[in-house]
Amino acid sequence: MRSKVFLTVLVFSLLLSIGVVQAQDPVTINVLYMAQAALSTEEMDAIIAEFEALNPNINVEVEYVAYEALHDKFTTSMATDPVPYDVVMVDVIWYTEFVQRGYILDVTDRITQDMRDNIFDAAWNVVNVGGRDYGMPWLLDTKYFYYNQDILSQAGIDAPATTWEGVIEQAQAIKDAGLLEYPLVFDWAQAEAVICDFTALVYGNGGQFLDEEGNPAFNGPEGVAALQWMVDSINNGLTNPASITYLEEDVRNVFSSGQAAFTLNWLYMYNLANFNEEESQVTGNVGITTIPVFQSVADQGIPSASVDGSSGFSVVANSDNPDEAWAFIEYLTSEPTQMTYSQNMLPVWESAFEGENLDILSAIGPASPVTVPMFAEQFPYAHVRPTVPYYLEGSVQLQLAIQLALTGQMTPQEALDQAEAVWTELGAQMQ
Image (cartoon, rainbow, N blue to C red):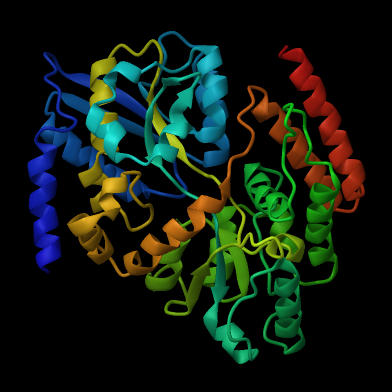
């Protein structure tokens, strides 16, 4: 109880000087945000209400869209005059593109020394392009390996496997025991979600997306074998075949209904699946650990491979209210705000994981004692998808290739070779 009281006092004292700007006349700023992982829409609404209370002359209007629609929604809007948004959430994979197109403001000179000293160094990589900062780091996230402890126990399994070969063996044992028809479920729809899982599998097999010269390399032996593993897991009846249509929320719903033993998802799922009885039928039985690797990589002493799902918030170029927009971003990404709303996402502030702050952070909710150390264990093995300017077009082609392989229309080698040819052409066009 003392921790919560202390946190409340800390938040209100610090917020008096964070994200406050003196707007002369009433101003409305428009924010584009995803309705998916990390902050829930209810949490974002609460943060906006707090900010407006501190800034009575600033009204914040937020538009929630699905993650898969956010990029195109924003880029399409930039062709209008005036631009309809002042603030936008930007995925790490979009920053290079948005900077090259002139869509977001350089805010390097707005970054304080306190921000630089106390935010994780890796977080600045999210918003930095060419040595300049184009937003504030907001989310450091990576995927994790989830498992149903009760199902594993019924199958006589003491702990989840640490290799993908072992996962297949355990899934087969669960299926043979008649506990589940499909022990595995993934978000392998033809969307960015499948690229995230593919990234973890490729790097977990010792592969990479690009070679040292920046040429596509995902169609090498390691990438082909990773995709073959995905195909085989469906053909062998271990991965739910509906996975080829699923996104993250579909996976969460299937896992939370007790219809899967293993899956991958972002951090937000742990709190919802393990503690929210309105959202989940498996509360108290959700395990979370680092993502496995293939045996050949494990033999090299590398324990895990995941994907970096980080993002930032940026001021939109040509915004009529850049100061007010920045004030909102500053408030949203501040340490006290992030500590208060840390149930489904953890702070980007390294100082939040130190000393008394760590004690407070760990006491905020039932998930924190698990998610805080798990983040520290998994994030060092998170791999960034290529930050090339043609990533969006390239990703679409790779999504298609993976779908063609998963549905048996092409072999994994044929499908990835086709995608590699498109990536090579796109790269040549940028030169």
